[in-house]
Length: 81
Image 1 (cartoon, rainbow, N blue to C red):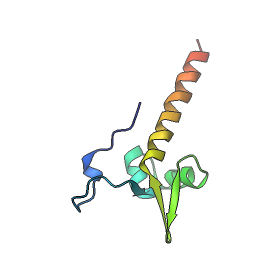
Image 2: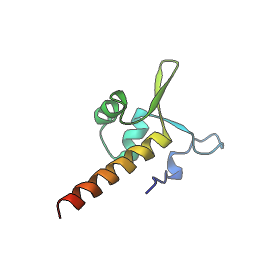
Image 3: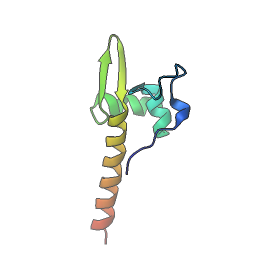
Image 4: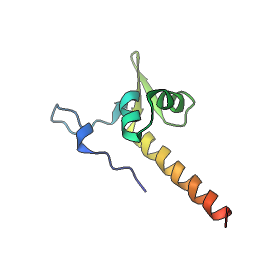
């Protein structure tokens, strides 16, 4: 499963969907709190980069995190049977 990012998060510059998003935008995309998003980024569960003073999240990193969640939950449900 891959995360399809909605066009509402696209930049207004006309370039299209950016490859990097802020931690706040990550929290919005994942429907989690900002603090939780920062914790996931800082512990490395969601891949990010530092650009100047800003911490930005790779969209691919968000997709990998969601894929990891799905895989983990599928494994847990398989073992529970």
